[in-house]
Amino acid sequence: MNPMKYKIYTLLIKWPLQEMRRLRRIEFKPIQIIRRFRRDEFKRVQIVKKEPVELFPQTFVLESFFLRELITALTPGANEEMHFLTGPKIGPIRIVCRMAAPVSPNRQSPVFIGATAKSVAAVLIPIIEQGAELHICAHSHPGSGAGATTPSGTDIECLGKLQRNGSPAIGCIVTRDGCVRFFSIYTKFHVLVLGTGVKELSQNVFNIAHQDYN
Image 1 (tube, rainbow, N blue to C red):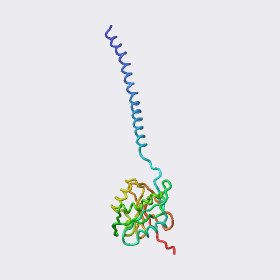
Image 2: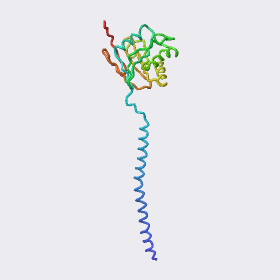
Image 3: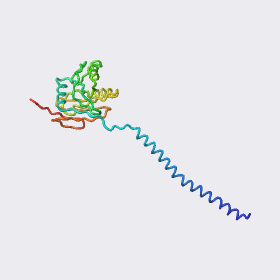
Image 4: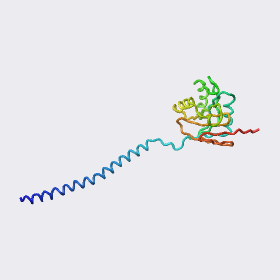
């Protein structure tokens, strides 16, 4: 065969094959991108599905009348006092309307109150036996104004331990001039305070005006 003809035949055979390979590479890349996108999107959807979604955090409902009674009960003297609060529960709604029996403290001062596990259990067990739940751990602080209701390191540690052990209860701190703060370490919550004489100072912090009914 003529050398020139051989080269022409070779080119005619090689060129279509090379062109087919080139086209295949171009077509394959978008397919790879689409497949990679689908895998990434599937992973993203899986991650989103695994994240817990809390549509309706628990809501604590209280009356200003009850909070005035609570402030009075927690501030009879100079020392800190503590009360556990309970009431009915309907789904995520917790109606806080009752004080449990007082806890017998083993240490008490104007800036601290402590109780033994036995004395706390003696108060909480009757609540559980009656089919109710602990809603709020409330205590008083010295001083006045919203700043005086800021949780101490001890308050954070105690409530955090309670919530880590599975309790949905939140904390409450009151002052003698009517400031009330609700707080939590891990539990998400809302607070509704109904009634007269209520002023919301900031999120979950209220002032309950004294009212004389006589």
